[in-house]
Image (tube, rainbow, N blue to C red; front, side, top):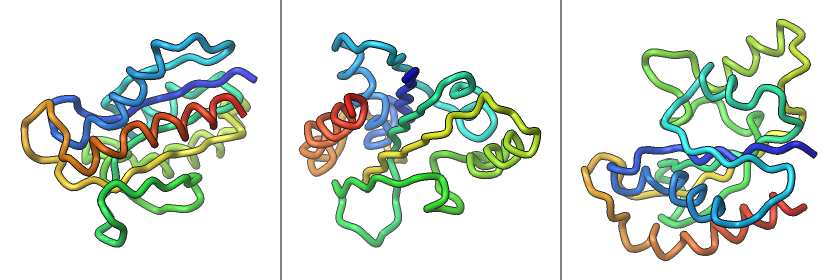
Length: 151
């Protein structure tokens, strides 16, 4: 199954780097039929990155205030309405972009989209170092995403 892993975030904004760090870690491994990308995009640009793949795995930070920092959630696009990091003011949200592409009858959208979102503490401070709880959760997140890619 042709798969893309997209690690989202900004490597200069503390915990927002988590998706980029996961993608970077897994890019060192030898996977078959899996492309690994790092990106700082949302909405239509994110959906366009997935076109032509059968499966997409996205890794991003999330702040809900409802879970402990470092909590990893495995969700699908239907599980959320809006999030801070997969939408931006200059673009439609990720979910809206998926709906727009789907309405066109585009068969290039992956049928299987999974999002690994990790509850983070700080996405505003300029730093290449993540907060301790998020840094501690990084190996668990890498392993869960690796297992997803190999399933």
